Length: 172
Image 1 (cartoon, one colour):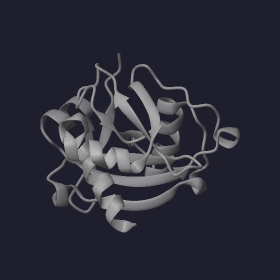
Image 2: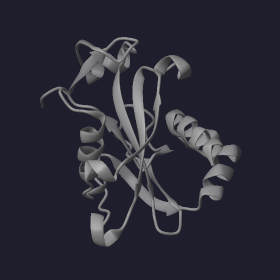
Image 3: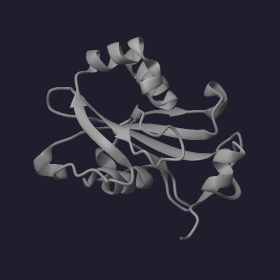
Image 4: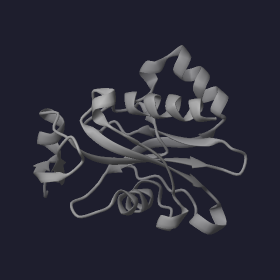
């Protein structure tokens, strides 16, 4: 199996080299990621439970979709690709609304991450079909229920999702 490679970036999100996924996570080296909050027509947010085989936060709940930016990709291109890989849905780059870029320094993380939102329409984007390698389960949930679950037991959720979700809720 070919090892996944990322672009290594500096504190200004400028590419300074390449690094394997394994090394980036083990050595906490800066790289790029994307997350998407997928909303249905009722304003519910799709959350997924990560598969047991994930190298970080297995079986925790998180963003509708989260993934890494491949070498040579833009953040938007990565989000479109990852939506297809993880959820089996198609979206155009211009359909993604950029909500915020999270700087790793602000969160003591290793990833620059851009959070997007997408208003999901089954007829437009296709049926959600979870990748079994990436996701154990997923469902649309009422935002207030997610908020309550995070308050009651934050350990069920990925730390990045909790930060993104709290940031997003403050914007409303």
